[in-house]
Length: 129
Image (cartoon, rainbow, N blue to C red; front, side, top):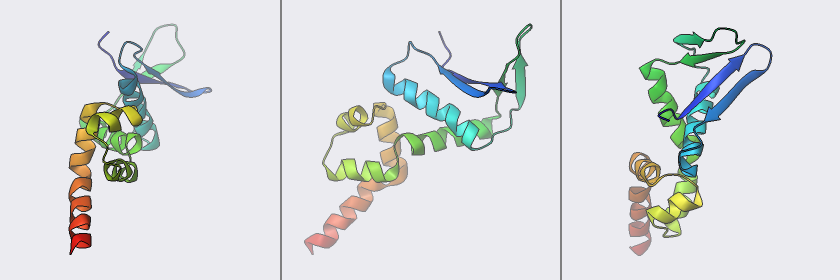
């Protein structure tokens, strides 16, 4: 199976997120957070995919919305404050990934884009003076 997750929108029953059960657990949560990000950002589908004899449809989003959902889902999955806490606990990336049930790639990405390592290092330098 090559799909990760998708959202089904139903006129009367709302939205439902489905994820690929063959992926690792941390990936499940990242996939679901990505779909939830689309919902929270009120992304308008660029295209609806409908199925004959079904009363629901799937949606696709444009590349800009996909990028925004990627970014926001990382913020939801591993918030900056949680990452600061983990780094201050001197947790290694693997420990952080395990603790927050996420991928090692997500931990590395969030550490890089948030700048928490630099912030904590600068804070330690101030205290050492």
